[in-house]
Length: 528
Ligand SMILES: NC(=O)c1ccc[n+]([C@@H]2O[C@H](COP(=O)([O-])OP(=O)(O)OC[C@H]3O[C@@H](n4cnc5c(N)ncnc54)[C@H](O)[C@@H]3O)[C@@H](O)[C@H]2O)c1
Ligand SMILES: O=C(O)CC[C@@H](O)C(=O)O
Image 1 (tube, rainbow, N blue to C red):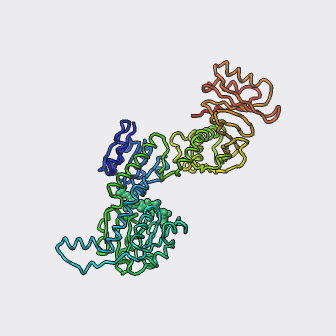
Image 2: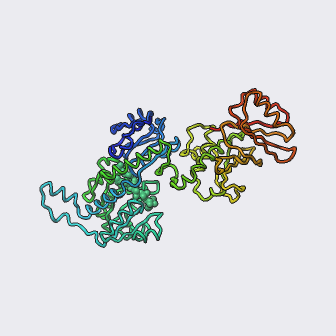
Image 3: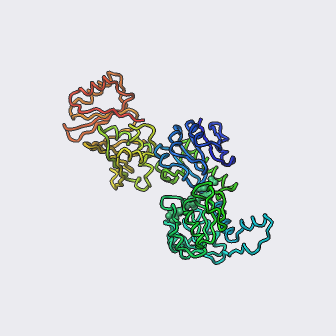
């Protein structure tokens, strides 16, 4: 039974996929204080939030069972992503469900701003009939500057085109081709400041976009410009906006999101040129149902160990790539687990090499899986594919990935070279059609071993009778040999045996083997 906590108001219809299941327990508690949340979070496997709940490092650390945090919406700035990643907790969002609603809200703000609808409404219901104070402006043939041409920015541009607006847009990822396809002009921020009658922002709030629109930016804008922020508080510097309004640069601003929410008595709210809504961009019945459905589906996938697509703190793996790589994850994990057991000292460098058909794919998820296998052996189950690269870095283990054209005549090949201060070991494996994962090389020795639970790796001198001696010693102690592979470099030189056995070796058998003449080392390898 998995326990799920929903701590913000979420569409009941949207989370029906969770609440209808008998193998899940879903608690909806939308009035928890941070202290209350801290007290209860320890018993939950999944947490679903909108933007109100602040999922801090403290909450994440107290979430001893947490596997996934779901954000029913786009922005994840209320979740400490680094803390979640460090703990191996997947953070998923619902990036598409509220795009239309937010684009429509932006447009409602744009029009309200132009025709002073909120101010005129207030005056009218107060008993006035004031037809002079609220003269507006047309959108027709005006220039709209869009900062951030992602999902919402693009939808806003479509609506603006229908109003015969000229659109100029800046986004670091906007190519000339895409701009042409959408029907907007691509420009710089400075172009927007210089030309736009309206500016709307649709970026995430990042270090780069924090106070992107500051006093310096306002000073470059057209006199009488109007601004809209339905993205995130903090992209526009609120104090600078007040100053720009007071200096007459800005004729109006429509603000849905604030640096602090609620925006306790900010001077901005005292300016008659400002209209405001309380973070309502995504607040429609449709959007709330869509985002809740999307995030519920993702949570179900994650709790059932199925593939998912909207993780924010790990790379997205397209479904076709994931399907193609799926059989390699097991092979990669086993190679990682074996490699770490072959070395005697802490590793400081790992080089992963992919060859054959693997070079056709985006292998980031495979790399994470190999690192997970490698690190788990010592660090335990706290390592997973979410935090594997983070964990590697935090243990000063550098890793790199290479692609090779040489796959030793196999259709695919994964090699892991692991280096310590004094030794370097290399392990290679392949996925053999019809046979599954095989280890085909250890250092310079060619072998062919399935990575089973108990393996015995013996380095010895190539001399007569070794196989017999080892076989007898194991047999006498009732250790059944499932398979045995031998390899040597030169006749009479260094040689290896890789034996798969049915159970771990008792200590006396190990001691006995270690004491045998011509045996150089014995390593038991346990795979999970
Ligand atoms: N008001 C609301 O209720 C509400 C609802 C939904 C989304 N949002 C917010 O709207 C914003 C946009 O959402 P989206 O779904 O369109 O996201 P998106 O990821 O589809 O688009 C964001 C775009 O911003 C661009 N960008 C990043 N840094 C930039 C910069 N410095 N200058 C210009 N462009 C930059 C990115 O390249 C990307 O194309 C987010 O902040 C999201 O949280 C608010
Ligand atoms: O949950 C909400 O209503 C806000 C959602 C919005 O800010 C988002 O980023 O998706």
